[in-house]
Image (cartoon, rainbow, N blue to C red; front, side, top):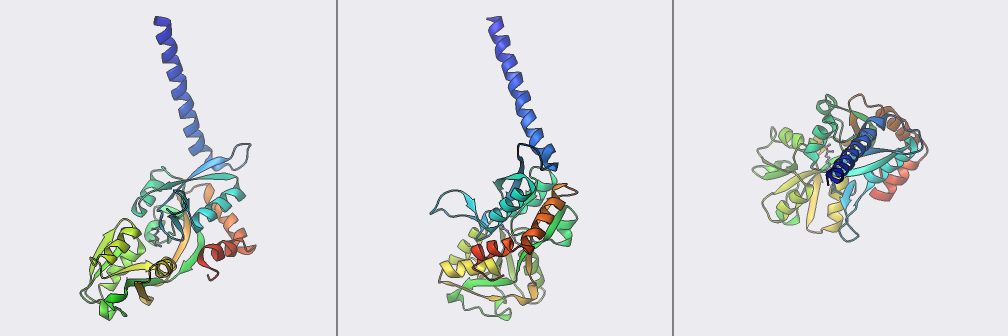
Length: 263
Ligand code: ARG
């Protein structure tokens, strides 16, 4: 009896040690891309952002999109493997800082504020921003947004754009964690309009004929880049691979696949 419990305890200890072994391997060995086994990079994203990253519920439960394809292509070139984790957009930078994830691809714009906490690759895609609204609301200009409720994603540059906008015209700003929630609030009339980047807004216009919008010129472009932990050895490898993909046309191919050709 005593022997048996000793055996169980030692199996348990071995199990724990083995588990520790794998987890340190994944996070510590992320620096070297060579070797027989591919190193896993944990990629954080916010899968509420078609066509960058989303779940096509008609087709399954996998997260798909431009960022997923791009991450896999970059990983392939540098000897890594990607494991995608879905979280709120607002949690991505803290998760990188806490080293819970290794990289972020989430249509994320490199802002000076974010650059204080994480590193970024070059920009891989850029589009301007759109005020999206219901056709029935008949809002066609910034002036017409006066006294309206504007929805934005929590922690996004669109939230900052709304704050800027509020200096120009009186608006009420509301934030939500997910773009899908913002669209829902628009449809139920709780929000009069929302600020979303144009590539994402265009997708909604296509699938929902009740939606329309106008460009928010003042907000400038929302460029997307890969974010990394500060001083990560992965940064240079990924950026070199990204430059290669820009030069050999692979990036344009992915852009054509997900955004329909135009850049
Ligand atoms: N480009 C904007 C930003 O960096 C919005 C990105 C939102 N991405 C997402 N997956 N919901 O703030």
